[in-house]
Image (cartoon, rainbow over all chains, first blue to last red; front, side, top):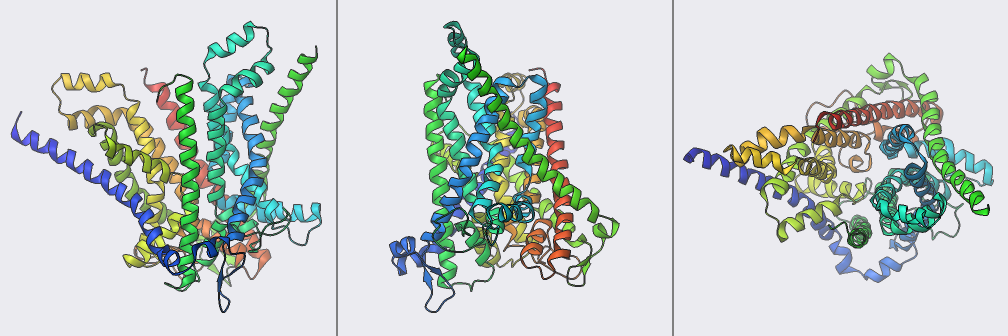
Length: 297
Length: 283
């Protein structure tokens, strides 16, 4: 081989290696920056007091940085969203898998993908101008911007994620399971509920976890429709202020380097860790599941 | 007999689920398009806003969204594709590759507002790019990087190993094989991933909230270091900072329609490319 060819080969190899590590550096950089900017909070104050503090008054004198109401609000709204998106997402997935014919699928799959591609700001806008006034009338509450509105909208947003991942999980179930079930006299519904759904169970739980992970990180929608009161949530009809909404609403006006600034990064760090845990759990479950069904890695 | 009734009921229930999902999709589309299309006219698309954002158009916001989207794709596409080529074609496994794979997977799930925080600290302040198109594009680029990497990886892995072996057997070097065989074969897959990322970037709001956007500016952005208006941020600002709720809501409807059209056109192009390419190769 000519020397120049070898040189060019190595040049390209090194170029790709460097570019690959450059993108890795960006990705690691996020973790680093989050830790660095929230470090003053971790060092200078009692972290437990911040995480379990119940009042969030960052602009008062003296300011109070208790983020418990924000964390609880995030989980509250996410829980509500789960009640909407789990039945709808899994129901739709089962329908697509079991009942929809070839032509129906060709129509329904792009529709659900379309639902996924609508930007979150449009969902937030829809929530503000349509859902909130509707709920205000139906439940007779002073403002329609509350946890319930947020949960319903977030639930709809997560349906495509849950549905397509759950459908993947269902399609991984070997055909022989189904045939064996029919052979012992079960009908389609019994086969679906007692054989296919349990066999795909861990894949479906992965789908739910990843859907929830998306919901808890959703920002614009909760910022616009949840009302924004930093209080510990007690009902679905009250305004709440999840973590993402707090960061988005306050970051623009905060003084650089102040305690408030660093606390917002600390909230970002917590959010980052929560989604990380969700993703790791989902990955562990799906790996085990693939092994159990004999699909390998 | 009882089990037959249960089966029927169960199937009706499943049908109900998909109908409710489609109902929501339909009502979002219908309400936004029916209100928004009335607002859109030539002036709305080409004029700058005036009289406290109650009149005129949203041209600067459209331009800003285009700049941000193009900027982020120009940065993220080469980086992401190169990273995927390294992972699939050059690397030989091992723990470093596993770490890269894992961090890419996990970063795909990080909330967009966290990317915004990172962009604000890193690009706006450490690198002193200020609140600018450059900072916003870089932030968005990192946001879509994991998506582009995994879409490209998938496309590269779908190229049969025998294609590469045939090329090597003819004496082609590794780079020649990648350039002449692997990349052309996987191009539709890579393109689909890139286009879907464009659609996602165009609609993202949280990352540009404090890295690139401003509610109002005179004229159009002149350099990568100037702030810009953007369609998604404009909707948010109109709905929350508005002093003229009625007029502002109408304009926000118009912006929502533009954004939806943009995103839907982009993603249907991606879907069409994907389906064409599936038919194209018989392997």
